[in-house]
Length: 173
Image 1 (cartoon, helix red, strand yellow):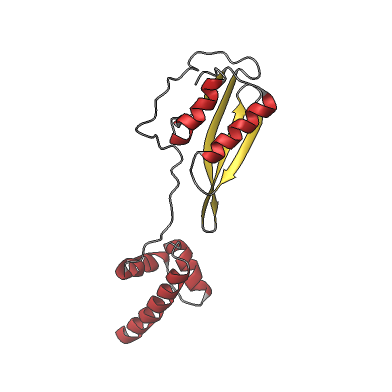
Image 2: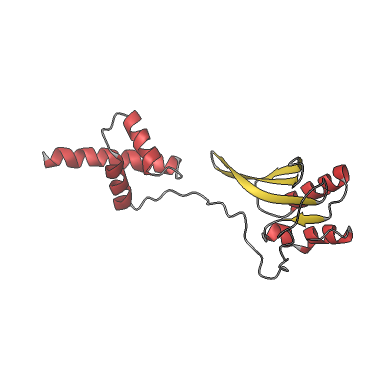
């Protein structure tokens, strides 16, 4: 009986290894589904244990969308107790991620807080500041100048290349 179990584990090991080489982002849940599709009678706990024995851990990039740069200026929060009652009074921007089959795409959107309208947006496969700067320039060209521009303290929004555009137009950050 033990030899049969050993033999079955060897088959599962080989299949696990082959699939992991092809799709290293599969965790125990996806790997269990894959093995079951191939006819292996396995549970998730068993697959997790076997992956641990083999030293296999899913490899995937975790998104970090709001990382401050230690050398960039920190800006005060200007919206506390502020009544926002007209368009172009306050714009905001943020970055989110869109999971893809192999990694992430990053989406930046610039919105008017009063109207909730998305004024501009861009997609990028990297977290550099360029796609944020492009979205900002586009929004300014199409909709004019806000009084205040609000973001988190992420490095894309605190880089002098981004804040310089706002300061040139005397927009409070």
